[in-house]
Amino acid sequence: QVQLVESGGGLVQAGGSLRLSCAASGLTFSTYAMGWFRQAPGKEREFVAGISWSGDTRNYADSVNGRFTISRDNAKNTVYLQMNSLKPEDTAVYYCARDRSGLGARVLDVYDYWGQGTQVTVSS
Image (cartoon, rainbow, N blue to C red; front, side, top):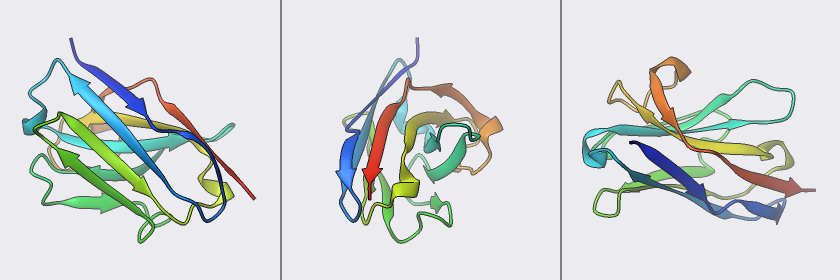
């Protein structure tokens, strides 16, 4: 049974930083690409960042490129999202998910398992 558990969310002032973690179990983690998405109230879930199984390929949404960094530790079955220079518009529930495509893709349809999400709130 695949389980993804996010942690690290919280309340931070604009300009601050947070690091999200996603611990995976029930899968051969090192063979799957992973991604981070977010969903703000009243909005659709949107792609934030994706990483290939090896970590060699990383994709970012334009809105976070240069501020967020996705990484993974296959020995710990964990994927991370380092978020710097946070803005109020980054406020959302953040989800990690498993990517079937292997590429860290931007499209939601290739992600088949999701965590429960962690709330990130950025105050102005």
